[in-house]
View 1 (spheres, rainbow, N blue to C red):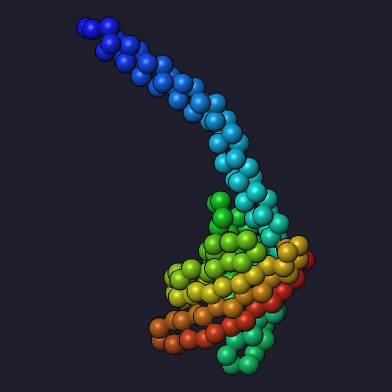
View 2 (spheres, rainbow, N blue to C red):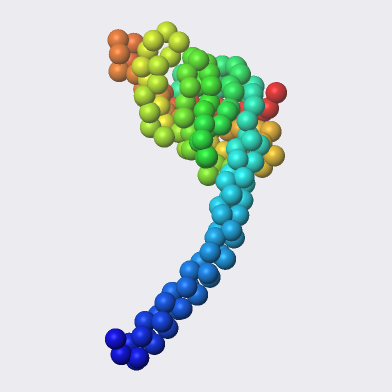
Length: 154
């Protein structure tokens, strides 16, 4: 092994070691930033958790009043309990104060299967909720409606 290749190999090893030290030094900052983002998401979700008294108006002109409960279901996911006043659990994805009820099939308390999807928003302080959704059932009692819901925290 010549002296020149040993010097080059040694220099590369030292360079690699220096890069590794730099990366190790940045690791705590990266973990702290990731944890801060998770904590922020967790706090945001917590702001909206709770029960809301809502009024729901659907295509037929009827207005229904009932209570829903919003709870966390992961990093940016929510569950809306008693959706459509049918003890349905609807999944929603939170983005800031807005949420999206992704297309999904849900089962009511009477066993009917509905396809739902929609979107909504919470007030900044989490005291109010507003959303609209479409609900469909292709069973014997065919149903296809658009509904609007507004409510405030109990």
